[in-house]
Amino acid sequence: MRWSKGHTFGVVVISLAVLGVGAISVYRTFGDPGKWGIWSFLILAGLLVALLAVVGLGLAHRVDGALMDSRFRISLAQFQLAVWTVVVLGAWGAAVFANLGANKGSDAFNVSIPSELWLALGISATSLGGSKLIQRQAGGSDPPEVITPAGKPTAAGLLSKRGETPAEWSARGNLLAHTSPEHASWGDLFAADSVDSGAVPDISKIQMFFFTIVLAFGYAIACVDLFATSKLPISGLPEVNESFAILLGISQGTYLAKKSVETVKT
Image 1 (cartoon, one colour):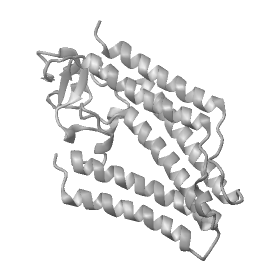
Image 2 (image 1 turned 90 degrees about the vertical axis):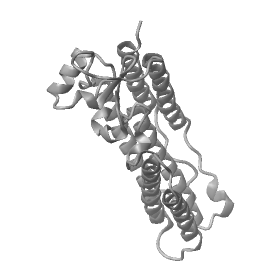
Image 3 (image 1 turned 60 degrees about the horizontal axis):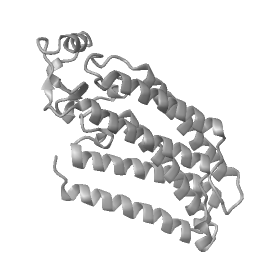
């Protein structure tokens, strides 16, 4: 895994593109600033995704490498944090650029983020940290052990039934891991983590993924509606009610509790 000058160039180009969108916002003389807010949101979200792809390619030689954890598995917690980063940061930047397009000067940056949304972001960050802590406790200090029918018959049997090669997996303590980044799969988002589970579907992960997509997509639509209908300047991102954070918190709590019970050795 080597970071090259090409990857650095990609990061620089994406950064300049963000500045370019800001410059267009300041000097543009056409169209509706509110509609420009929608375009800014879509452009910034796309640039943030592109940045994640460049970083992934530079460090793991995969466009989705930024979502991969130390076990060479696509991490649901990292995916969730990435989704919320793209949506919230893209929306905040778009609101600022829409205000700049309306010639609001330095006041354009006075865009508040609702406290409930900060709570949702905090829950996502806490879930990622908690997931890493559980992995450290469950991973043990022994070197990775390649899964074989002789050494890990349960895991090897389940993996074989799924049409996978057990030798592409390893056991780190009580955790399943891929032996190399090239074996990482988006199926990891929905597969259980413990060795004994053999990467069978994990309902808590499925639930957490569903909640993340629905809530993030719903909030993105609310942001687009804000840019399309609000009078400028935009003073803050859309409000969310407490049930928003409660749903996210329940999803995260279920995920972490199940992960802890299944993977941490007693």
